[in-house]
Amino acid sequence: MKPICFNNRYIKLGQNFSVETLPEPVKKPHLIKFNHQLADVMGLANTCLNPVDNLSDCTAIFAGNLIPEGAEPLAMVYAGHQFGCFNPQLGDGRAILLGEISTSDGAHFDMQLKGSGRTPFSRDGDGRAALGPVLREYLLSEAMAKLGVPTTRALAAVTTGEEVARQQLLPGGIITRISGSFVRVGTFQYFSASHNVEAIRKLADFVIERNYPAAKSEDNPYVTLLSSVVDRQAELIARWMQLGFIHGVMNTDNMSIAGETIDYGPCAFMDYFNHDQVYSSIDQNGRYAYSNQPSIGLWNLTRLAESLIPLLDKNTKTAVEIAQDILKNYIKLYQQYWLTGMRDKLGLSKSFNEDKELIEELLDIMATGKADFTLSFYYLSQVSIASAQQDDAIHALYIDAEPIKQWLLKWRERLTKESLTHETRKIMMCAVNPVYIPRNHQVEAAIRAAEDSADFSVFHELLEVLQNPYELQKKNDIFMLPPEPDEVVEQTFCGT
Ligand code: AMP
Ligand code: MG
Image (cartoon, rainbow, N blue to C red; front, side):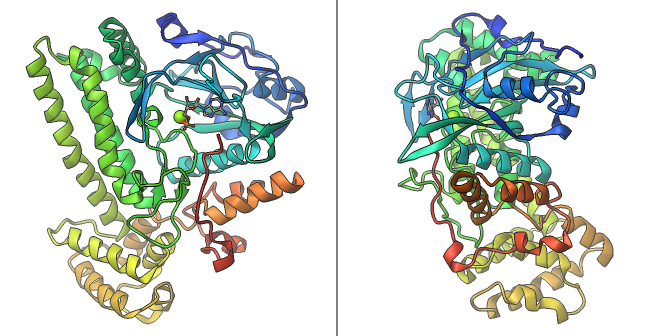
């Protein structure tokens, strides 16, 4: 059997960055799902992390009962603004970084168990995760990956054979998640809060080496680091907006330095469109509502910029000006990413000034008409430009069809300025307008079956459909439909 190629760089940063911590073993683990495709990308074929050859060791590793050779388990320290309030001491309270895996072609993956027991940062928590949130994270993060959005990935999920106490006793689970980095905006804030400039520099150097190597050759690599993170977040949040995704807890400790979607808690994809949609039960004031996400992105990045000030220039005033310029650019970048992506969704390859208005008008009509976001765009990709004969499916999504009929006239008029053929436009639109998203009621159904009757078939079936979100899968029509009134999920929970 091949050894796993661990090359653990984070632990080398030293003791104030993490605490060496072992996962707490569980009673009776059972492997629910292993992501063979991702394992292959990570070079894990023929290692002990392959359940086909070695189910019991593999399960034990994903449960935290066995430490693979070369792993150096630790809990990372970080701080963070939670709903706007600064908490100087957070950290992995229920996660353990097993280590960094490198592949022969130079890719790097951090591997973390989540739900693996108490750590020095657990505060009053039990360090555990319930099975429901584990399945939810598995489904949503893998769906994101297949939708083409940067995200942490799911390598495996296990049940623990133990119960966790939440509002009620629930079966426990552990997810193994993979990322380009588990460093967060909050990691920088942790060192900034204690004015530890050397640690900030060390962390920044680590992130540059690992995630932004091109910055090394720039005049000031830290300026490039900040502008690169800003760019990636602008693009990421634009992608969320284009898919109707609401993260739900955009605290600074949940914002990845690598620009990946991270920490799938009470997140959700919208069914019918609402600018101010909130699902999270703990987001009482709608701080993280759908339409607030771009500006919260800027708020969080401003916290990162503040933490990096000592590295941007020796002169603080100059450093602040540099940071302000980069942050100003976020707004521009976000708008560009958003507009380009929305044009693609509408099959517009050319740019005209009035496009923005056309897109915003559609969203407003969707909101008043309570139309399903995903299906609205998918059906648009299916209709003919020339004739309105097949428009019925679109009209049927809206409470009142009149406004969308008027809008379709404008859209068709706009399409006449394009030089794309109908076929090319359709291919372009189908590549960005998914048929399937992990709809709340279906995720909920998968969790209910698993938690209530240890039936994982619904989870597996849904996960399978989400592997090809942009392709109509004939026998799986049910997965493209919005919920019936009695299936609507109004609230989601973070499950801690
Ligand atoms: P989250 O809202 O999931 O990003 O978590 C915020 C903080 O609370 C992080 O430091 C987590 O590690 C910690 N946390 C969440 N749930 C638990 C738990 N069950 N036990 C210990 N720590 C937790
Ligand atoms: Mg978190």
